[in-house]
Image (cartoon, rainbow, N blue to C red; front, side):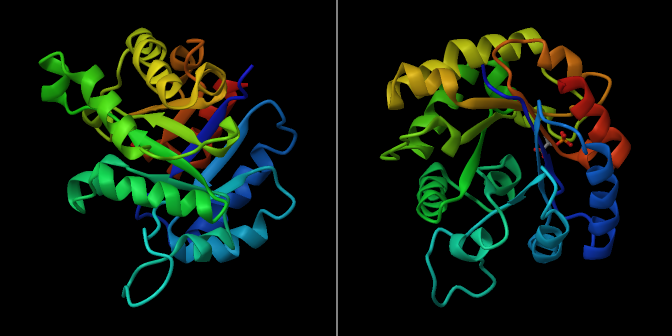
Length: 251
Ligand code: PEP
């Protein structure tokens, strides 16, 4: 059995004080929770304080990006070792980084390796554009992103990586993919591709999330699909009520 994971991607939202007030509400809300893992990924500027606040809470902390480089003259960048002092996970390959910052599968592959080398767990995002889905190309796009993004990556333990399937057209749009289609795609494309890379046992044990306009009202449909192990949540993770509402659907 794979334990569900609900992850929140705050993107470029919440100052440190706003983040602290949101996290205080989340800590109260998940107090006795043991059946679901919860991860929040705030901006870098809040990681240090939130790490202290979460010290005796089950809520996990993640970054939204890291540099592919270990250290050096890379102004404005944050290395995996720096992020790993405060958090366990890092979102990589998010469609916004692919679209707005030109991140390629090759670059994402370097970042995945940097994260693993620093002891961080990558949450690797993959997903097709609307045109790719409409032309019947979703499966090959997703398999290609996984193969290139994970090329040469050795994964001895399924808990060291999370995959997030996020159709680009569903992110922040209010349009979500159908739960059945998503379950079929994860079972029919994503797990078989991971099996080709790391074998059947790892591919059956690794957690694969759905992301794209998940809210408390539609979350249950996704979580009833056996192939879907939780959600990566953007907009709805910015409100304690909404995020806790989604977590409750996963319990
Ligand atoms: C995301 O940014 O990863 C995401 C899924 O956003 P939203 O939930 O707002 O669609």
